[in-house]
Amino acid sequence: MNQKNVLLSTVLSMPLVFGATEIAQAAIVQAIDPLTAVQTVTRNANTPGPTNNDLNVSGGTIFGNNITRRLSMLKQSGTGPGGAEIPTANFGAGLDYSNNAGVNSKLTVAYRGTLPSAKFAPIDLTVGGLADRVALGVILNDVALGQSTTFSVTLGSGTTVVTKNISSNVDFDDPLNPLPIEFLFSTFTGVNPAAINTFSIMIDPPANGDVSLKFLGVANNQPYPVVPEPASILGLLAVAGAASTVRKKNS
View 1 (cartoon, rainbow, N blue to C red):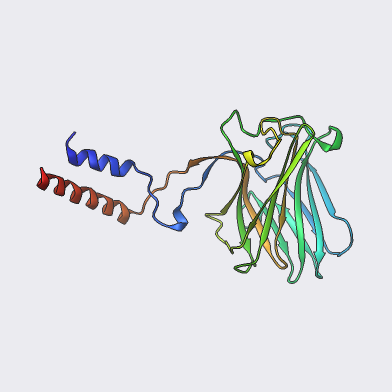
View 2 (cartoon, rainbow, N blue to C red; view 1 turned 180 degrees about the vertical axis):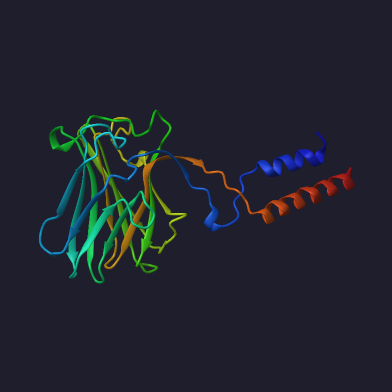
């Protein structure tokens, strides 16, 4: 293989990233929940305690049989309704969570088993060592830039239960490229991700905020392949040719 072909092969085999919207994200290994089984919860009153809706999703999630998915909505302030629905009206599989103007509430999605404390039989969230994190694909609406939306994941194994929080201060409304929110298993001190018996997520947007989940899964740090625009490919070819010419002149 001549020098030009070696250089060209090297350039085209490199990871290609051209802009903020094209940055490769962690690769999804397996869905925790495909978010297709129909379920809704609505809350109108600003009274103590949550409003719950339970649905048997046995066999439909990573957690196996005898599993109940609980949507739990706690209204914190404001008048008028808020609610959540699975799947979404806009893009199918997923979760939509919305609040009327001025309404502030938070939503918990918990997966409950039949063991004491609603635990389920231990499952391997690492999928045999392939995954190292929980990944949420998030779409934010009616959240002004600088306002904070908090996402929480709770993992438990044995008798140890740990909750981690991540806050986002951006307005990200792109259903084709949702904002990734990721929780590394290694940050859940004392929890064995290969023997999980407790799992839930919590979403707490600012007043008036609407949040959608495009996916809920486990992932690793292997990037998705990023395909450059045709013009970018031509630019790379030009770079390869120019570099080859320089090498020939110097040889």
